[in-house]
Length: 132
Image (cartoon, rainbow, N blue to C red; front, side):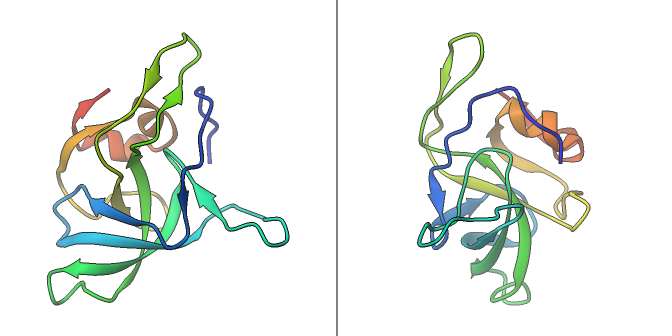
């Protein structure tokens, strides 16, 4: 996984619910685990922009519901700071379903995504309609 330039805020803990921002069939996801987190005793794993997480599909098409999937977080409501001093925050928390290699399962992303996601996951950036 490639590093990103912004100072990340890990605002989404395990158990948090997200919108699914692509057209894969899922609508609501719940974070089960965060990939690449080694952890500290009694600290809940948390994730931020451009992190890969393991999610359970809570709402969506019947064939994808209750599946355990990989996802990349593309928007968070908590603001974070970029190196040029700009602070970025979105209206909601959202993720895009991907496979193990980081290639998206859907063909289109609804809404804006952060440019830090495109830095780390270029395949996700190829299907995005708007990058902020």
